[in-house]
Length: 157
Image 1 (cartoon, rainbow, N blue to C red):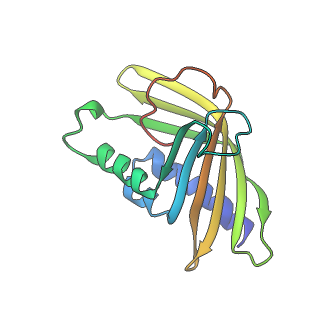
Image 2: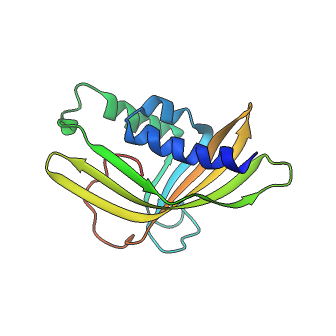
């Protein structure tokens, strides 16, 4: 696991989301992956505490199918997004170089029609090395204003 490859991977994930390459984005995730957006500051448990989102790979696939569907009338016009990332910081790499943790500050913009929403926070990735590639085991999104009322978040931060 080399630091440049890890950082490039984080930027590539954001690029795939911004260009609506949903299937390629899903391929970045491990079969046991989780996508988590806590509802409390420094929340430790996504099961026993409420979360804004806590999705496994099955639910991520369902959301991607909905976003890709031609008969998804709630997505006409389609939502679009833009990720503005600070340089990802590598927090930890295990001794064998098989897993690592990163933290990336971001500003995320989502738009649909004339509605534009912005969110800021930190994305934490837990990556594992699998078949000469990285896979996302956990993506955790900690929003600065996690306790604010939100409208529907359509896409992925």
